[in-house]
Length: 220
Image (cartoon, rainbow, N blue to C red):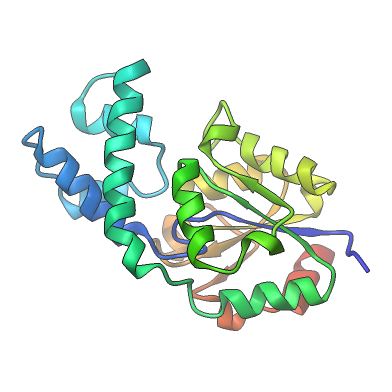
């Protein structure tokens, strides 16, 4: 039995609360350039943003081509080194996914992060065999807030975007989900309700989320 809707998860701040470790990695990386970023700057210019945007903001210039690829790889390798011993899902996530799968819901992950980060999370959590679509930054040309990654995910899952529920934690991510025509649940791991675009529902963690609650959202 398959349902007529699908659920798509962002990764950072949605599957795992990785943002504190991304902060540590960016701080270590930017120190090489004698840039001392504040937490306020990270909240405004790092969480939920693409690496090209972050580098441009902090270095005050465009970083492209080989230089961008090299800088991005260095920073993300730092992140993986820091986070690898500490990978844990957001509370209730695995039980919620099991509830979705027991009810025939197709699921996917759509992240702006590099594929190596997605592979790290999948190597630590029992998710890969429960997902019918896995997309990272390598799979798209345009990053969030562009809806490309969510439109591709919906196509992979064989479900119209308007019948998808997307779990997101950032301004760019929520905007991407809405632009795709999907319904969006705001995960309040990083931002407060008033700091995100208006979502269809909000959760602090997945202990309060069930198949029935998602089904009600689709049918609303």
